[in-house]
Image 1: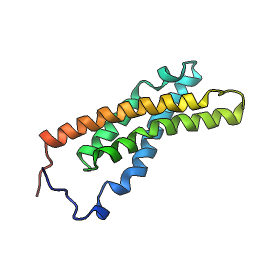
Image 2: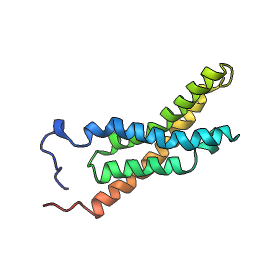
Image 3: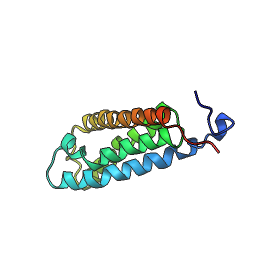
Image 4: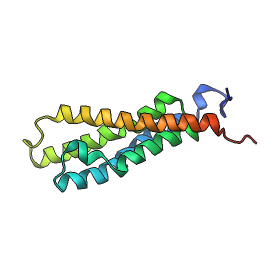
Length: 137
């Protein structure tokens, strides 16, 4: 087991990066998701693509290079997907209040898909941290 790069739990380098990872993942998912929804695709199919690859990469990077533990890195990256769906949902509800009558199901679907993508990324990051540990200087 390798020692962490930081000395105490309060000065963990990844702790201050949870919110930026969440926001970046939400933006990476929101842009292609909103374009695909406006083109006529439905919710689960509109989420698949480059946005989920970005979520998996962010979770992998947070676990492997930033040294975050499994749960915070998965939650920080995976929560970006339902946040992106919520932003698009609020935008559509402002324009037409009757457009999303099943919005709780949309958020649950987005949370499950985001958790799956983040879990894959975290597991890859964990494997990389075990088999390719960072060089110590």
